[in-house]
Length: 281
Image (cartoon, rainbow, N blue to C red; front, side, top):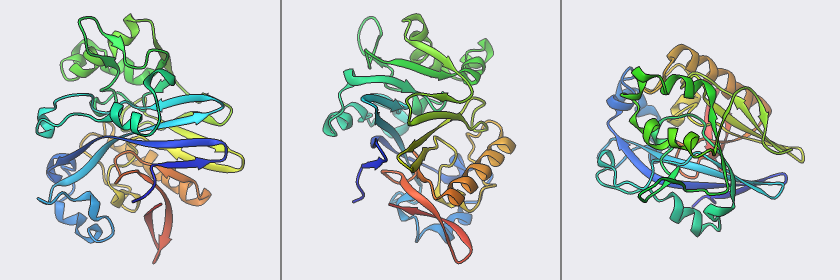
């Protein structure tokens, strides 16, 4: 099994698995016939559940850089989750098993504000408290502006329940544009999936990696960049960003961490028989 930890120069990246999620292909990729994925079954068998549904992951990533611990996304949350057959999220137990304490996290960055990325923000109890008590929670400003509109809150109750209380608790900051989190770690805008979608670039000691959030959901999309998931808010912009970013990752040889790809989501983009291919580490 692939390692859940890698080092990029002086930065350690730890993959964290909150939940395995199975969906009908037509629900996740409504504009793409399920049989269009058939040529990719052999190469990416882990993307199919035993019953033939699309299998994906709610993964998060912890970075250790310059003595700081940064958490990228917080998964689906504790649950139980009806849409996962009553399953519960495992982020906190997985962090513990990999030697990461909730109280050591100094920064939580959300790549975007979809429900499978903000679930562990608050601890249970009569009054909500931050799950990561020492952290500043960084929220993409364009996503905040969209999802907190009164007409949107009905469609995004998770924002009201799991994100807006962070503001009231005084632990939330809005972010936009490029921003350095440490000397080796920078957040960069990659809009399209949502208007404020962010990725995380690591450049350290001559090595490079990027945590790409929901730029893609299935490894077939590294070749079929025009394929959109049904959750891409701006399909045309999502395609443009996906194509541009994947071309950059391939040309630079940059290691990628893609949360919805088979765990732990680490790999590179390489050319095989003239086609761009996801090559897991």
